Image (cartoon, rainbow, N blue to C red):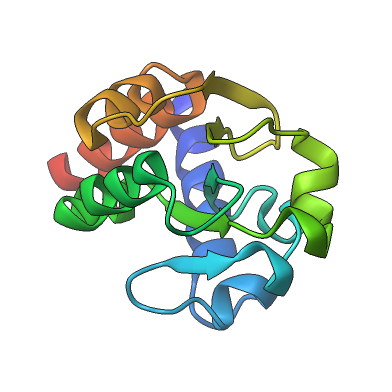
Amino acid sequence: MKSLIKIVFSALILALASPGAAQSAEDILPDPPIIEASQTSLDDWIWLKRPVVVFADNPADPRYVEQMQLILERIDALVLRDVVVITDTDPAAGSTVRKTLRPRGFMLVVLAKDGSVVIRKPAPWDVREISRSIDKLPLRQQEVKDSRDVLRR
C-alpha cells in the first residue's frame, strides 16, 4: 500500500512539473536565471524556485560586484538547486522585494521555496556555501531523495 501511495504521489508531482503545467514566473525566466527586483516579486516564485536575492545601494559596490562574479562562475550549481537570482541595486526604486526584506547596504538573502528566509549575509558568499545552506533544507533533501528513487527504477 505504501508503494502505491509513493507511485501516485510521484505521478502527481511529475504531472505538476510537466511543461504543460502553469508556471507563470518560470515561463519568463532568462538564462542565466538572474532577474531585476523591479521585474518580479517574491510571491512569483513561491513553490517554483528558491530566490537568492543580492542587494546593494549601488551597482558599483565592490561587495555586489564580487557576489555577482561568484554567482556567475558557478551558476550551474544554483540552477541545479532551482535557484533564481534576484538583484536590487536601486534603493530609490522601492521594489516590493526590498520592502519585504529590508536590506541595509549590501545584503545576500537566500529564501526557501515556501518563501521563508534561510540566511541573511552582510558579505559576499561563495556558491558552494550558498549551495550547502540550500542542501540542508528538508524540501531539498526530499528532492534529492526523489531523484535518486526515479533513477533506481
